[in-house]
Image (cartoon, rainbow, N blue to C red):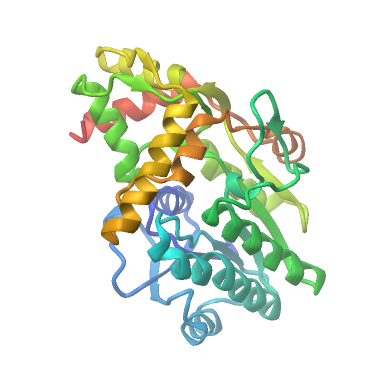
Length: 330
């Protein structure tokens, strides 16, 4: 793929940083489009070209694509706003919906291949005992972030119907080295300090960041136009997840299971508190929804059509813990 340039929008975060790292090591020509105030520490020491642009600013994105990309180059849109709370509703709409539509439109007109990075929440929220695939009927209308990611996919599909060459990649719950979000690291840190005693009743599709990065590149090279590909991992309960982290850290595993009703009640109470004090408190009814259900997803389509592979969940946790320890983040 070395003859093509790869333009990445939203390449400064956890997944973007790992993707740029992988492409840099492969000798690819990478252009990272970032906001003026973006933090670039995840990209330190990597080979890439930087270009300032904001997905909420049509002219800035058009300028970057016009001057730095060419027909048949690849564009990867990782830009996303998952900040919780009502005060970020407008930003989530601007980035996840309007921004997705803008990038897709520009890619079509430039005749570039687009890989749009969505979210498992845009697939929907399967009931316990159900493993959702790409054909699952979206049902997440009570979760604003999920709705915006779903609508973003719809915007991309509209451009595909107009002739855009695009693939939609759908990550699940991803962990690994180089820049995990603070909330993710706090879970590891809390277990190390023996400060996390409880576990929620739900489950997650735990994905290795290396697998996801390779999956995104498989979408670039092998993905069928118009196809959605879930790039997930293995489905495990939160109890299994937290217990394995504890074992790797030689710490006490959380032993108190919280009933779903308690989690829901706590989430609703935090919504009331946030409304009263006019400030987000970090926990909400939407977040409670995510941890009480076993949100399991299938990557069989990507495995069969792309050759996607999945690292065992225990190894994923071991690798993550090892990196965090080596880099003094635990």
